[in-house]
Length: 457
Image (cartoon, rainbow, N blue to C red; front, side, top):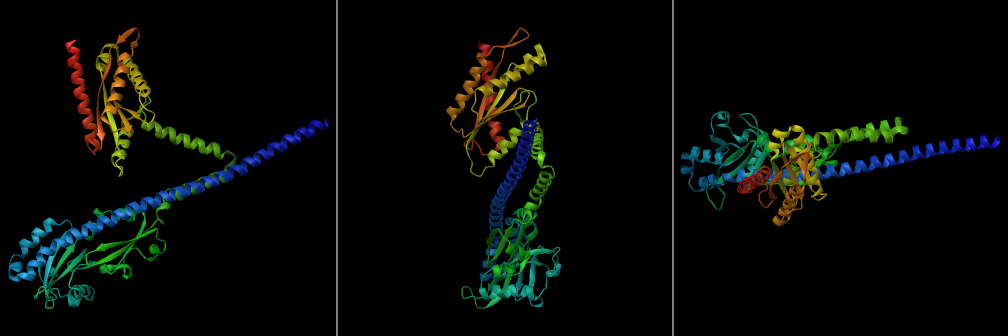
């Protein structure tokens, strides 16, 4: 009896030790998982920030240089023939605004006083404005005069209302000596529209971003977006070159992780330490539930293939890949499917669709993806396939497999074949819709050809 008690105690102790070991191991593995997850999310977020950050910088530089230097023509005419430029100012300015994307208005100042502006409507308050009465604006006008080149002012509040960036060009009477200052040309740029179109506002919504260098004064200039805290915690910093100066932009992921990442970490940790005994099962069940729901939204219920939604999400991802990796799409339509449905009912049609789906899966690579778009239409994506003969070989193989297959439903022999066409990315086109359309057109031609052959027989 003593031995049984001892044995029971040993078993109980072993169970306790096993549970303790499981708990400790679970905690360690769980924390390692969270740490790894955190590092991966942070790495991806930083990469995403860097990509968007540099794209925005390039967009802003391109937009500003493009619009600002449109004014060079007017400055040149003013320098050479002021009477001609002033008499035809409205026509010149109208053309420049039409050619620019973000130019709001163009003004001419004689000395330091604005004498002409286009369009006049809405900007009447600016006429007669003396820059010397506004120290902030006068400073940039003087910089342009002293530097004898374009200077960017702003972003700033306009006299006539609204915010803008202003490119100030000095005009001299004695070109090319440029010692006798006559006045200047101001190109007013719609800063809000420019920042929206270049993606800056979108970047601000996702990450912490700060820009300094008001009036093109670079890294030592005042902030006009964000604050110094962003620069102190910056994950990336870059100079935005603008005409006559520069801005410095900094980006930080301080805002980025607060959305999904930190919430998920807190939830996982609370659940983990609160229900540590069942954490692995709970995580697996939650993940499985998510996976099943997500998979169900991407699957065709009848055939088990990926559905139309999945196909076009994946196509969009492939075609927008900056590396432009080649791939092919095959569009498939079944010949004789309507007759089968009409003559033998939808159950026969479902049987045929399921069988064809299995045939396709048996005759393509594991890396290839077959989707049912609806009805008797299928789409196959072949990653890294870019040779015509390679794709045509796949189509031939599929046709032979369908032709050699005997389709029987309730003792009825069913006649079925398939038509197919393909498109190669990016060789045929780099547009998703055009690629699918190209494959569909080739498939329709194949279908017409098969009908002609059938009639001839």
